Amino acid sequence: MPPLTKMEEKIKEILKTVKYPGYTRDILSFGMVKKIEFRDGKAIINLYINTRNKETADSVVKEVREKVLSLDGVDEVEVNVETLASKEPPSPKTQAQAKSSPFADQKKIEGVKCVIAVASGKGGVGKTTVAVNLALALAKKGYKVGIMDADAYGPNVPTMLGIEGAVPQVIENNKIMPVDVGGIKVISIGFFVEKDQPIIWRGPLVSKLIEQFLRDVVWAPLDILIVDLPPGTGDIQLSLVQKVPVDGGIVVTTPQELALQDARKGTKMFIEVGVPVIGIIENMSYLICPHCGKRIDLFPHAGAKEAAKAMNTKYLGEIPFEPKAAEGSDAGRPVVLYYPESEQAKAFMNLAETIIKEAKCIETLQ
Image (tube, rainbow, N blue to C red; front, side):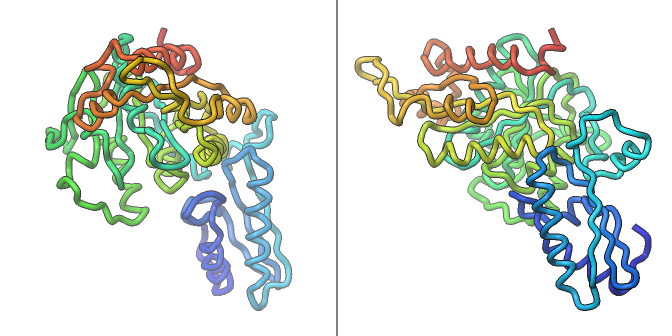
């Protein structure tokens, strides 16, 4: 944007209080404000909002209009907004505007063919367990796989893979070699901090970390990169999709209603930022009795299946809970590697097969 007048600076400052729906960051820091102009009592604001959801765009426009109108000296507000809603072929003008969108800096990771993000609306649903075992299952299917632990505040991937204390090698040009375990490449902030050391970082620092993991780690050659996102719908999720085109998103939930409510939010998050939703996984769907081997439903059955149907997305299947497998995760022995004959390991292998069929980016690797 060109240099701003004093009133335009005031408008800019108040726009910093407008949060993008579902996130903690404001629309200005996301680069959604493309123009601020003020003349003769009229404020003109141009926005680019990366969504196909009209309600989201309308919500942002409404708040922008209200807050700018609250400024002394502003009599009228004109908000011009571009979104992803139009399905018509883009004109040269629209293409030029898109280049300045907050997602214009997306760039594929060198040597990585397919990026799949694993998310959950809330913590405690076994998202990392799913991400780790899915990566291992895909590797068993013959794919070159990596896993990026993007949960900067709770990096559990090293623990689940039994590689706590591993030190990635730094080579020339400050490139980082990921740790190789079970046939997959792994990177995590857990390799760079002491165990139990809290990560107390603001959003911009975490964003830089994500970019470093994407650009400075030697992933190539890789068919599939699994990104284990933190719970919720925060800054890290949006930082990821701003930096790389994510080919598909998977949402992990458990059958109880509270988890399903948050899973719906996680699914909507992917839709909002233009990431194709591969589907929803129901983890800890039932218990395998360690004595008789029979199935015990811990929660009302098929909750995730109904949620997927209501959101018009794919139900990818259910993963059982097995005490032995849970102990294995805590001890760094993921079931796909250490208990391949268990019901849980078989469920992960079936899940991998389903995702191979559903994820369009994997389909192109065949």
